[in-house]
Length: 314
Image 1 (cartoon, rainbow, N blue to C red):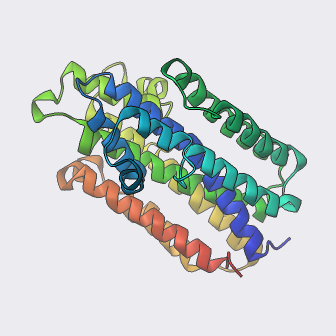
Image 2 (tube, one colour; image 1 turned 90 degrees about the horizontal axis):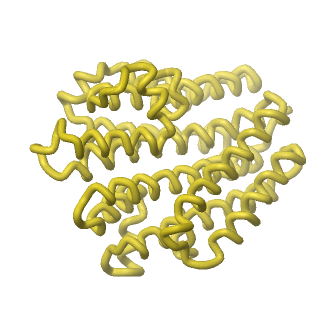
Image 3 (cartoon, rainbow, N blue to C red; image 1 turned 90 degrees about the vertical axis):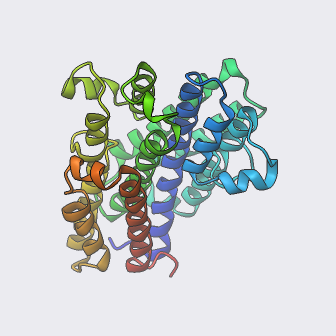
């Protein structure tokens, strides 16, 4: 089977948007938990909005940052194209376009995600409801992934779905890690403090990595080990290295299916063999923030190249 460019693009972006819904919920959780460790939380939400890439749009509508407006903007505001409700709706639209390429189970999981989340976010979400709603977003995304893993053929359709998912996931992990390192740490004096430990634990918790980290490194949270874990660990499903390896694998499968290697294969090889081959001490020495921003640029370049190589808009 050869997937036409428009269908390939629909699959890719359907899964990018579904992954973004979950990742946005995770970033809201980061902001909520870290704000609890600080005396004033409005600056925290400005930081989260910046990391999510929606700060300018938020300011254009609201002017000043407040916790309630920030949460509403990220979860349910129709004027924010990256809000959870917006991206789930767009994912459903893409799923409808590529319906014949999906199993019934995947289509139903996407449709139910939209219906369920639209109902859960029909009105502004209060403090008592917030964690339940964030959990619901993560669960619905997981249901779609489960249906995909359990019912889809391992062909080019599956590969384009996976490319969308891991592209978005890698980008979000870099953004979440950058929130802590570059913006949220209040002062150099706090490095190594109890506050610092709590914030690093919050970052790990936001990517469901606390237990896995402790299996690797023990109970003590150390910034170097946390960053190394989220960047280099090839067994951690949300690490940069794990996502980059899956992107490479699925592009390799497409090369086998189509009998041709594209420029995107060179881009992803460079990401794996050069960018992510840098030791953690070297990354810290040259600047973790700079590394993460550069990595986000690599992800954006890879995404654009995949669209070109596989003619998403043909």
